[in-house]
Length: 428
Ligand code: PGA
Ligand code: ZN
Image (spheres, rainbow, N blue to C red):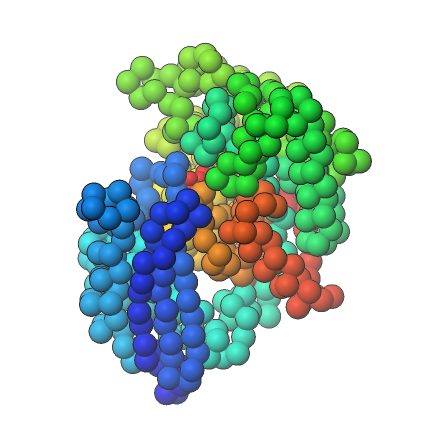
């Protein structure tokens, strides 16, 4: 079938939501299919992520340019995949991995490779005249993801003193994605009013993921604010809008001294575990991501043992969407959920493999954005294609975040009666 053959590949330098350069790739097929993909970028990156290639040339973009990755697409990848059948995603991804030849995609750059991988999938879908989620997920794709919305930002994503990175609301009490978005927005408005009245106008400035970045110091201050906002919006924080945390603990772990710097104190890992257990007793927390730093599988196992009946323990920096690290976690029972970030691993097929391995072993899967995002909405389609049931893509603010929510609203509308919103069932 000639029409599916790749006829055009071009990369260019574009921008992400922090104004940093990122890779955009355009792929076209002979049948006039077109796919454009933009690659996201993290700030609190895992040490074991695939390598994001940056130029390091101080004369351009403070060293952050991505022209080397762009040239790798245009000069090395493009000639190698011209004429390739775009429907053979797995074979294409394998070819990209071989062309690179390194374990962490450091030769061509994971940003170069991922851009091609995603743009190719979109071009194939477009050639078939199918929406991306149906091209990837077929007729089974119909579960809308429950959004985990990060509405108070701390850690490396905000200019405040909160140690933990993300304070999330999870609208499980809705019966559709549309209603979930409405509930979450209403809580977001109430939070804004509350922060303004308690901390002043500066408190409603937003962080990288659209959540507020108030001048708070303590974890409990942020959790109290969320509970207040949920109640003010008229919802029950135990059953309708529950809470989640992304500690991103690698960012406050002092490796030399072996302590975690939380809320102005140095905590051992045993004390940090007690801290989480107390929080889970005091607040309706249903999900905790990266509670310990990324090398401590044992501590992840311990907290999972203690909390698995009531809390989802999520591995982000721990697993970095890598089947090898995920397998290690599964073997010892570290965490019970995988955070799936396509750019941590660098190809669509490998990300799907990680999701499938997780699901087969009873782990939840949360498809996720990065703190540096673009208007690209691939992850919205991917969440539905995988029937993952959860997505983490920021507050209902900033265009690069709402682009994903708006895409999901469109998908739910398109699915009509077929769409399923799992709500609280994701945690069973
Ligand atoms: P990052 O943060 O994109 O800056 O890595 C997101 C997360 O930790 O989940
Ligand atoms: Zn995280």
